Image (cartoon, rainbow, N blue to C red; front, side):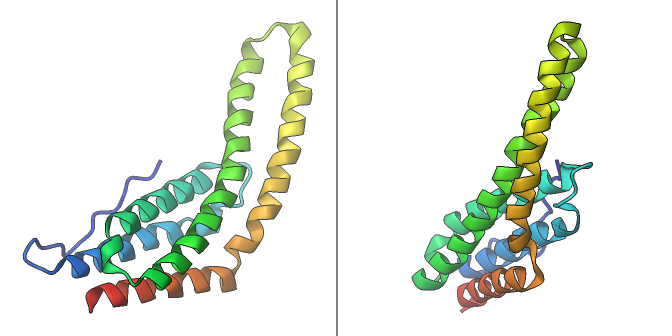
Length: 158
């Protein structure tokens, strides 16, 4: 799992809104940094890292909630939650497949075939969840999310 980036430039003497903007910008960059590998089925870590980054961003937004205009906050949070939900659908399958892959190696020979059938079904669900994730990773959708997050940061600085 990727460690959170340090938020540079934080100063206890600056206004709370300025800190909010810096933290939201840093956490948003973490989300967007993992987009490129999120749809990969062979290496599931980029998707996991992106999902964790969305959770960190949501937590930061909730913590700094008083700094943001209500309507803009709700619009950005709605979009971010939708992304997080789509990432979660895929991640759930990744975790189950990983667990069963380890389990099948130690399972009795008579059970391995059944487990492989179960894994195959989960792989199909994983593929479907990946297809459901595609619209959230398209450039236009992500540009809209970025624009909403940028609006929040600008509003917090005012």
